[in-house]
Image (cartoon, rainbow over all chains, first blue to last red):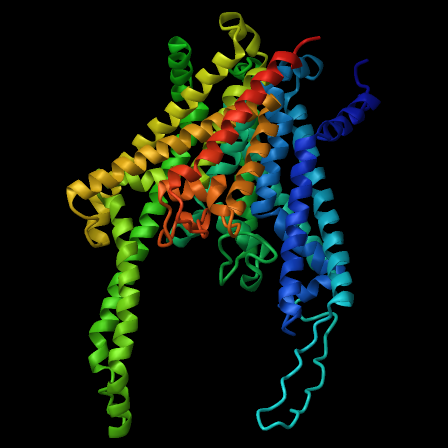
Length: 304
Length: 317
């Protein structure tokens, strides 16, 4: 009927949820579990190595507060671990659909490529958000347990050479919430920033899937260029690279490098607004290019 | 068989995925060559400057005569220490200088290709070429042409190996061009040796590297045929690679395991600043390396025998 507004059918909502269910595959959950375990292992290793010496990096001891742990999880998901996980997710979802030839079947039911693409991206971002929250909570639980089991205590001082016992220094006060702790607002900001970075990763991987139409092609072209060009941040071209924009936006602290995030650079003078705008523009360009690639007739033919 | 190998090789060499992976590897290889030459040249220059300054280091006007005498007495000891450092940096420089040599660049590149970056690419190509056939459904027409799956997989393994050898040549040519046109001028390094020595070292290194690549292609293709899904093949390959690298340093046994044996076979040394980040042989053994490779060869043979037996029964309804 003309003039009536079309209400979203129940089937459309289930289609959106179905995309998330479709990601329930062994490779995706295996990769997600590996990322979470690796993030936990890094934090636990740092705690164990520091606690025995009575010295703990403030960025690690701050993880005993939930907002700080969530912020650390957001850092992990917006850097190398998140990039790899996104590559696996998009390759398993969109890449497999294109390689197996089921994309053309999907188009028979929903010819609006933008909607299909938005569902895939939405599912990947929802998975990323869930992964960040789970990782953050696990980091918080693990470090809280460690704080009870292996509290940071100064080492006992050996007796002096003269035979007399050296005076034992008083135990160091362990501040449960050091200055590096994040507020809930900072944690929410970091998670939002990580989702923007994830959108860029998802768009780049989808563009790779549209171009190469294969699982391995999605992995190679979705992850490879960012990994291979990572060392270029050492050159004067750094301000024009997405690696630098990511570090700018997340305000990655240099002292937590290779501890709470795996990334190549933490800029001394971060410009979050510039980084955020540049990332948003790059994500928009990549998403549009992926949409155009997925609309083409080429995407309907299975790869040779 | 020959036609199959030729067709598969042609397909891999022309496919956008093969070209993409090759471009990524060449770029990464160039970066590694640049960093290793820059670091080696800087280190050699710095240690030489320190050695040159050493005799004058005690001449500070702030030094009392006693302090100056004490300082002069320590100069020979410091010189010995610096000369040791200089020897190590020179050895690093000689290895980095291979990337500036038209022939030696092959040896330099084969070490990168047989380390983690190259082996990851090999797993990706095998996952696409073998597991992808099942994923895309194109295995059926191929089996109509060649119904013996073992021969088909052997042809694919040979094609993946040939692709890696072509990549080796292309990447070595790019590295040599960079070294000759820019590296030699910007980063002066000690000579990699006489032409005969470089030729002999390169021939041995490339032979060993080609053997490692053949073994890696055989394992990657077998994984793809076992799992029949590209993503699972890739993830399983990565897990296997992590296992190989991590066990290479196992005390007492590492030299006999695939990681340690292959690192010694190709000649990963303690002075390669680039690829040692990925793969270190820290379990030296007096047993000949060719003997230590035998367990790895036996494992690969068993894998293929098991795959053959499994394939005879798994598709029967």
